[in-house]
Amino acid sequence: MEHTPPLASVGLTEAEALAEGHRVLAAVQKVATIKAMPRPKAVADPRGLVKVVVDAETDQILGARLFHVDAQEVINLTALAMRTGTTATRLKDGIWTHPSSTEALNETLGKLAVSRP
Image (cartoon, rainbow, N blue to C red):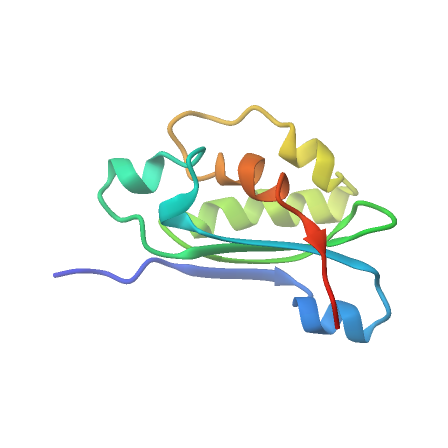
């Protein structure tokens, strides 16, 4: 029986961040296209998406939506970064366990772009 990957969420959505007046950077990627994310491919389940929302002025992570293998674990690191003020750049530049789903943060955060309302 095929199982649906977990969905994990923390913080603001892109729409909520824009509504609150943040200047937003956002990145969204299909898991199957993230080269730096080997774990889902290793367990033969590359379904899903990764989306991260960042404040363009402070580089603080405002929220994330993760739908992929091990999302329930990656969201904990994302939430910790938010609570401790760790910037998106520091998370992007982190060296993570290999092979893991956490490695998606390197590539996805490297693709942040200005969000338009």
